[in-house]
Amino acid sequence: MKYLHEPHGTVEFWTWCRDKCHGNPVTMDLCASGVLPMLRLASRLWWPILELGGGAYSTFILHAALPRRKILTLETSREWYPLLCHLLSKNHEIRLVPNIADAVRWMNGWKGLVLVDHAPAEDRPLTVEQLRGQENILVCHDSDHPEWCGGALEGWKFRADIPWPRGATTVVSDCIDVGEMLKDD
Image: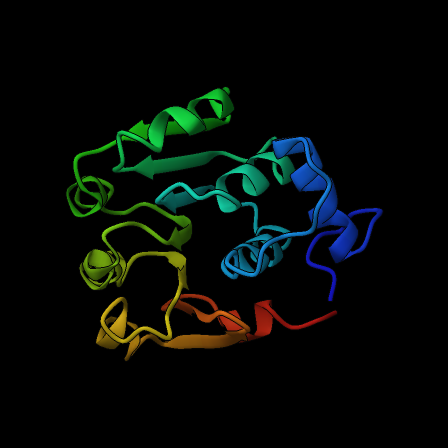
């Protein structure tokens, strides 16, 4: 499955991202299961991206793959934040916030693609509930851990569960059929 309309296939794309972002040409780690559906959705919708929790793969790959897309990364870790700051650009904003729930609260009415992968993971159900009913699509990493997303992923109008070798990702929306959006052409 190719997730972007790029001149290279999926594996080559991941190698390119890692080479561009980290300086070592290796393929994507299996921990980054949320990145694939994010890129697939981003290739079909010109919506801004909200990344809740910066990641060793997700932040760098989204930045490299979507240089003209508005991306807002919210990070809670004072240790991790400086590692992301070199990605700041006119289209990529990175903010250090005390906690994700408070930051999301002021974003009421925000429309876009949301990658839910923040720490502490136990706060993710609250975040998911806060974003319910808005015009957005949530990509929830590690959704196979009931305590991390649990019941907050139930009852959405549209849902797609994506198995992954080291975990799962669930994509939910109340406004767009995410199952159709994630299908191959």
